[in-house]
Image 1 (cartoon, rainbow, N blue to C red):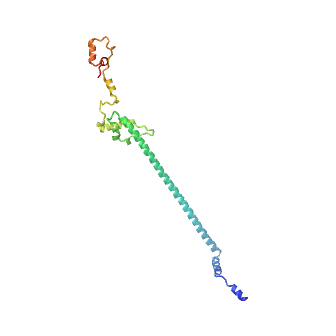
Image 2: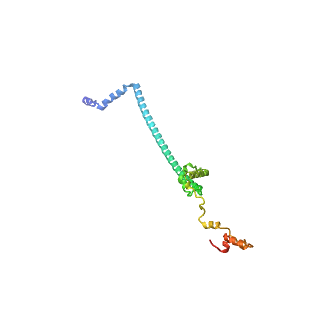
Image 3: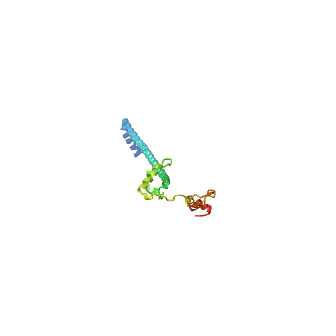
Length: 202
């Protein structure tokens, strides 16, 4: 019986270490445990704060990247608008300049080749300063007088027959020469005033 009792009193090695560990921790006493717990709490708080700071930093970075992308997109949209407006203004200027140069330049399209259109403003409503156009054309003719329209050059419509018709002497009718002397009628015929009456074609 006593031998069995002695055998059962043999303790497990793991259990034998436990009292030493517990004894070691207990040796800190309550103040030591509280200090250790406080250190653990501070460490956890520091970790939580670091994680929160990183999350906030990531959010700010994403927000900044979003604003930067939005700003870049806005710049691109404005660039497209400016280019479209510039193209429209150029078309308006060329059209107005050609109209203003007609009759002043032999070839009105030359005006756009020699005049800096960027110096002439177009209003928001698409209106062009006509005085600025006239001044620019006058300045161009001063520099390049050979571009001027030739004086006396026909600039009317293509139907020149009507112009020649208007340039003929005024024709007299039979009623107009009623009572005239033969000499007067002869003089009117010589001047071509009776061509229609006499059926003469030119």
